[in-house]
Image (cartoon, rainbow, N blue to C red; front, side, top):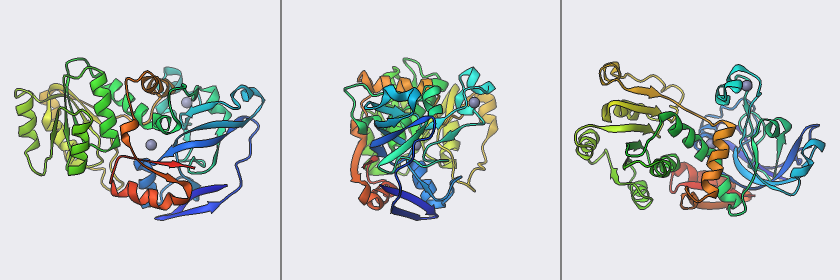
Amino acid sequence: MLALKLYGKEDLRLVKVNVPRLETSGAILKVGATSICASDIKAYVTGARTKIPIILGHEFAGEVVEASEEFKDYVGKRVAVNPNIFCGKCEYCLQGEHVLCPNRYAIGIDVDGSFAEYVMIPGQAFKVGCVHEIPENLSYEETSLTEPLSACFRGQRKLGIKPGDIVAIIGAGPIGIMHLKLAKAAGASKVIISEIDERRCKIAEDLGADYVVNPTKENLEKKILELTSGRGADAVIVAVGIGQAQKDALRIVARGGRVNFFAGLPAGKEEVLINTNLIHYKQITVLGTSMQTPYEFKKALDLMASGVIDVKPLITHRYSLGNGAEAFRVAMKAEGLKVIINP
Ligand SMILES: [Zn+2]
Ligand SMILES: [Zn+2]
């Protein structure tokens, strides 16, 4: 089969490899659609992955074509898969906070992923509730976005977005836009987006942002205060991996507000000088979230199936596996939002 394999820093090759072999427990999935994540680009740029070479790809959906005895019922079914495989037994998994599981590993990150015609799903994924039949009204392409949407869903669940909240989102990439849609669905009275790229400002506006601020043209803090009667935003989501954006978040959040450092910072740039008195005197809650529990993944799928969240407008580019290099080039240039690979 064809696969996009990462061999090291900026070394992604389209190769012919064997179709993965079924293990004693698990299934083989024929990939229906898979999408490029910012973390795939990060892996491409840095060459950093626990396993090298590796077939990348962790946002995907497909059809089960083969399964071990215990999962035979899934054969022929279209499924969405949470790529994170949890142990289900540690203290964190028992608490329902699977994302903290020290035994976690992920498809496309630690083992071969979905930028291929077929991908192997370990039996443990079925056992901990990470495999779901796709509702009839959802396509493979839409379903491949369950993974990033569910990570955003977790971020907002932890932030506790309530009806009437004014939410500020820094960054209007695919993740920022998903946060915009989720905040609207949660009843935010105003969603304000900060974005430096003009094309993405326009997209955010078209997709329902109440206000879009370009901080290279306007003073972000001043604008936010203006839009919130001088209070600041109740909740701020930092959806870009830039230290300055984290600093800005502490300034634009209201007293008693909540901030989520949703995006990780690049290696070597993790240390940010922040004014901790803002946290102390404004009594702000600052938190971070990443990944998603099996529950959050299922809820994100439900939100798409019920039509509450429509991810179709986020899909701006489609490529075949053979044109994978071009797909990566486009995703890196951030010309659109989500880039899908249809093997
Ligand atoms: Zn991802
Ligand atoms: Zn665990």
